[in-house]
Each structure stands twice: as C-alpha cells, then as structure tokens.
Length: 103
Image (cartoon, rainbow, N blue to C red; front, side, top):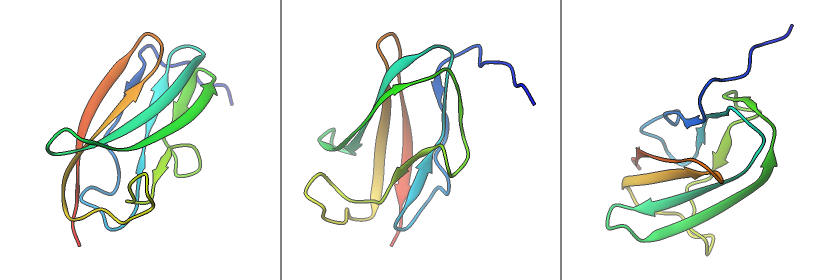
C-alpha cells in the first residue's frame, strides 16, 4: 500500500523511554536528505555521533527503520544513568529531544 510522504521532517520521542540499555529513535523525512544523530550528556558534551548517510523521504518509525542506540559513547563504553539529549540533523532541519537511561 502506498503511504503519503510526511509533510514535516522531525525526530520523534525515543522508545522505550526511560530505557536500559538500548533505545530506538524514530524520525520522518519530508525529502531526500543526509541524516545524522548526535547524542549529548546533560552538561552538553557530545558523547556519540551516528551518521546515517543519505535517506529517502519517508517514515522511519519501526524498530527495523528507526535509529538504534545501544547506550554506549563513542569509545564503546556504557553511559551512566541520567538525562541525555539527541539531535537529528539534516541539511535544512535540526531538532532536539530528551531521553532518560535508568539502570
């Protein structure tokens, strides 16, 4: 079945939230775009960058299509419990949301 393309590019709330130790971050694109996700600690330090490359317009909301984060920083270490922020970035759009990891 054909689904209409999203009218907006946006990042949606991660699930589950709170999570331990992994989460999925759904998003939707209203046009072909290069996509990346940056994860920041509550003090604003970037702890992970996930480059997704070029993605087609569409919905990326299921476990198979959403962005997966294993709760690890860029050094492969498990992050501690707390509040984190994730920022979806495309060429023309960026949006930030909050998530919580509980151990």
